[in-house]
Amino acid sequence: MATPARHMQGPTVWQKCKMGALMGGGVGLTIGFIFGSYSILRNGAGSRGFLATLSQYMLSSAATFSFFLAIGSVIRNEGDFPPHLQPVSMQFASPLVRSRYEGAMRMRARWEAEKARQQSADS
Image (cartoon, rainbow, N blue to C red; front, side):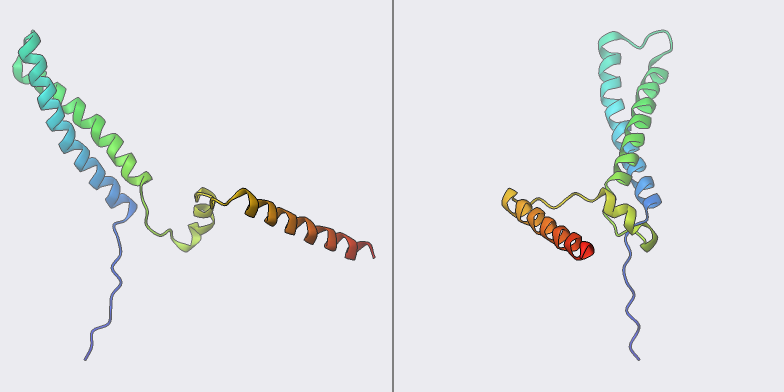
């Protein structure tokens, strides 16, 4: 007996948000470690000590990167919208790029259709 085919669904918006936050956290920790270590080697650890200064650099960098990558992952969501959100997605869709000539021809056709509609309504 054949097994029914299941549709593979992509990750949800929440899953993309979490994935972006985790990736941003990892990148932020790495960048914070690099720049924090460089800053400590160059300027000294200060009164708080080496570990506290380095962890502050790493955590602030991780929080910033994870916040922006989470938002970016959600904005970049290219999945299909559910049926009840299709009209909203059409508002944000980029318009089709057409030539000036094609735009002028479409406008002329609309004007002609409007003229014909007005003349039929007048008579």
